[in-house]
Image (cartoon, rainbow, N blue to C red; front, side, top):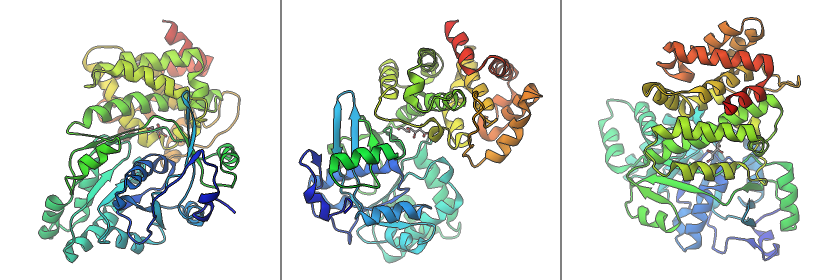
Length: 465
Ligand code: CS2
């Protein structure tokens, strides 16, 4: 017997379990994107609110494309164990907030109906950077239109993806899906629904066989959906809710509700995620499998330390950046996480625009050095070769994989032209950087160095300077 509602009573006492009644008939939240992150982040915040006795936070979870995951979670009644582990200890917990599930790709109507259900008060989203398409706007609008037509209250629709201004982006997508003539609907969206921006943070690697084995040992029953995460978590959300009383409730569960999400978003995207992408690409090329293996190499650690302090921090509005940087370096080293570099390198074309160019442009505006970002960009170019420095091939998992590999293929024979072609792409770098000859020259420099001497040598040379 696997983990399920029935098995809960058999779990050893050290495993935290839900002690409230789970009611699949009345979830209050529809969540789009059932990946590991949501299940070990917001789902655990909602679990806390449910444990506090507020039964409006059960989740109707929607997998966007993957029926296998939804089937496995359904077979376990929406239950899964999370190992929360870092230097302070190891705990296992089974959150109970996931009450119902569907797959958007094959059960679209059920998802629309869930958003229009009277019990629904929130929609949250973790659909990744590439998920922000007109089809997503249409899906949300279809649910919201039913609410408006039925005279139901408006709801809070909270994007929790790693995009700057994520709430504004989502609101724009939903409104773009509406017919411009439908002024009643557009007005209802503006006055009754809220699209707060938010910054979410917790490192949650995709599940691995190792974590499942550890779960079986800790729980005494198999759990095919077990996850591993760190103790740290942060959710900063803009004080903009359809029901304003939600602000105090979320605060009671440890969420930071503020008027200024922007300063948290920019620091997190450029420091944490920016370093992640740089390390992930270095790891993929040098054969270091995990973020912890990368940060464990002194020269890469120094690179990340300097990237954050010298090139990112000067452009942040968050003043406690030095503490933030030091805490991040410790989190990257968490030996329990086994965060795969290839997982983070996935969809790099969608991630780089938020993570690197704002800092480079900030440095340029101040006449300051952007060498660390130039080296990172050169590593990205080298990454498009799809073979590591030991000759091992890897897949580029990216919606732009084909075009990136086509541009990158010639880098051994025509390295300079190839770097120029990849740096010309405005979808990655924005409109200003492709015009900046100083930037292009430094990326060409580091790329040549990498081809001749390898990534480690380049990072060592820069960090010894
Ligand atoms: C990572 C993030 O995969 C990635 O792109 O950088 O998932 C990162 O682990 C989270 O944003 C941490 O909060």
